[in-house]
Length: 299
Image (cartoon, rainbow, N blue to C red):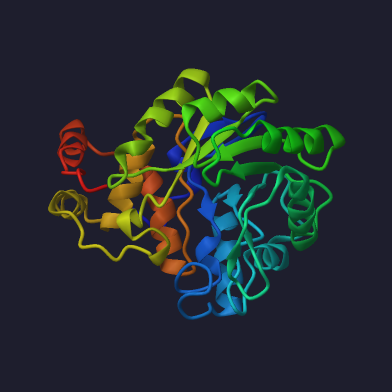
C-alpha cells in the first residue's frame, strides 16, 4: 500500500441519502486539542487548518463535527469554516445535536426538544451556512426519541436541515425515527474493541442506511485516544502489510460492509495521510478471522 498516493476514493463510495460520499471521511473532534474537549494541549491553529485543507485535497468529502467540539482555545466548527469556506460543492458536513456544554466546557443537561433549534442555529452560525447538510441526534440515554427527532424533522421541513441521522442508538430508536422522517445514517461506537455495535451494523445494512462508527481507532481509549496496549493480533497484521495498527483497525471496520463509513479524526498531518490510505488496505479473509478472534469480553 502506498500511503503517499492513496486518496479517499480508494475506499469506495456510499450514499448518505441522496449524497454520494467517499467511505473514508474525517472526524473533527480532535482538531481542537491533543485530546478531546478540554483535556490536553490546544492544537496549533495553522496546523489544524492545514489538516482540514489537506483532507479535502485527499478526496475527503464527508466531515463530522459538532458545536460542542471545542477546547479552551479552539472550536472545531470555526476551524472548518476558516479552512474550507466557501465550501466545495461535493463536501458534506455532518453535525450533531443533543449534548450540551456551558461556556466553561462543563457538560450540562442535554437539550430538550424545544432547545434543539438553538443548537442547530449555533452550528449554522459557527459554520457560516444557511442550512446543515446532515444533523445527527445524539442520544443521551432516552428510551423514546420521538419528540426530539420530531423537532429535527420540523427543522428539516423548514429548510434549516437537509438530512437526519441518529447517534448512540438502538434498533428501536431507528424504528421510532423512521416513523417520523427518513434516516440516512446511524453513528454508533464500533470497532475491534467494541463488538456491541454489530446489531446496529446489521440493521443498517438491511435498510440500506449508512453505518458510521466512532472510536474505531481509539478503541477502549475513547475520548482520551488510543491509550490501551494494542492487541498482538492487530500488530501481527500490521507487520504483514507494513502499516500501522491504526490503519489495520480502519481497514477492518471498512470491510464489515459496503455501507460502513469511517470518520477517523486527527490533528496530525501524517496521521491524516495514513488514515486516508487505510481505505486502500485490503485484509485477507484469514486476517479478518484472526482479528475477529480477539477476546472482547471486557469491551
